Image (cartoon, rainbow, N blue to C red):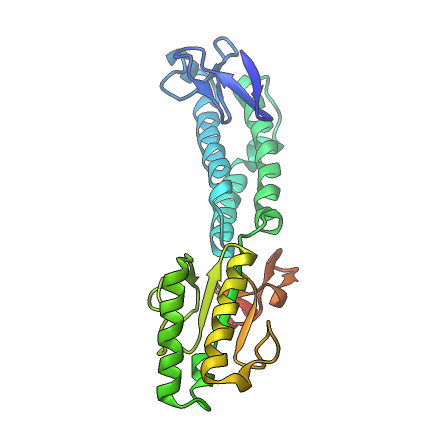
Amino acid sequence: MNMFLGGFLMFTCTKCRKIITQEPYYSITDRKTYCSQKCIPDDAFDQLYSFEYVNLVSSYRYFESEKYNLETIEERIQIENEMDEVIEDYKSYYLSDLENSYYKSQIIRLYEKLLILYEEIHDILKNKRPFVYYDVTIYWAELKLFIDKEILQKIFKDLIQCLEQSKIEFRNLSYDANNEFELSLMNYKDIICVETKSEQKTIIKILMDIFAKYYTSLIYDEETFTDHIYNGTVKLCPVCLHWEDESDFEFDEDLNVEACKQWDSCRNFPE
């Protein structure tokens, strides 16, 4: 019996009655669906192309499941390379005559599905919306150039204390942070990332109050610092794997994905 659930076609294994949410195995014996090779009737493997068909189903299932786990361009290209090998291995089956073989016809049907799946995987990062953080970025290295060391230490101490009191949960997604849950004056910069706009505004207010206490000339208006402290949104670049400002991203036609283009590893990604 076949049925739809949540928009997905589901099957029931003829032998064990398990619900199948992936591509099922079909048997020439009864033309029915099975969840695994173990459940397929033994005599089905006596038929021409049965092993080739079973192996193709296994490969298709693997690629389909991996589709939802892809987060980086490197992962996507690795899966595409694996798919290329399978596509090449089965091309001759697809292009040759049917020969009135049941499993040959199944291979051809599944091969066509594999080609469609390949296109879906190629577009997966282009279509997947990445998680975006609201951030407040502090360039400590630049602040050290004109703020007295003792004053900057007081600013940093007050910031840590106020963040603890606010109980805001943040991630420090700076590329040179040793711990994403801590800030450090030793970092070139800290990127304080939170999930909501209101949390971002709270952090900005904390900083405004602290700098009004120690170094008012850095404040431009009630929401903006002139230099060295910025706020916006950041997302993970799937190519260079750095968290960068959302406005820096542009679409890369060759890689078929949005990339930040801020790093050599991103601008010159190997083909």
